[in-house]
Image (cartoon, rainbow, N blue to C red):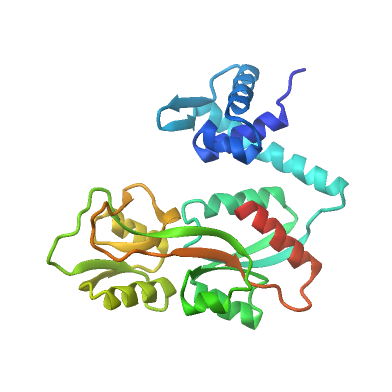
Length: 288
């Protein structure tokens, strides 16, 4: 009886998530030609086309979408069985707080994959601003906190002992095709003024004497993305916040250069349980 090869399925998942065979290759430690060969064999085994290929990349066909759902479950079960045999099963309740700037378009999918991989972990997730995460973590409200800091700011230096998960560039963003009207105040879109990125953006514009007016205050990054796509103004956001209808402002836009941001897990507390320490390691491997 023919069955699916787990490594081919793993590569298939990586290809669909990366959007191209070339981008997926380093994620599965294969050459581009080896990835292509694995996809050819998988489609042969499935008996139908699984990917639609174009100059823009690849997307799953209707059959590919069905197989993708099976692949996630099969890989999760395989990983769980391997960890069980190695005595690495993770079981318990974890309170996780994540900044809403962290990969806003992917976070739901990433957490869903985490739940599939560790079904015995009861995960309680809070999406908050970094300041609220750090304050809550200090009080013991969360077991693990994932926060954002802006490179070069005093707050970043104070948290230099926090392990960095990933870094991203900040960019001025607006609706696709939007151009800034010369001689008029910048129509600025922001989150509430308790947000560190809001504070940084306003201070930067004031320091560089760029006239601006706050045109819209969104409650979260998703609302900010919608306002940007609607053409209501311009915002300073991290690059993973780019989404359909939103683009970097094309140069020359005359706005100040921007630094990078770093996403990091808050340092472990003294006396932290082995479960929480292991959970933080696994989160880093899944979210990084």
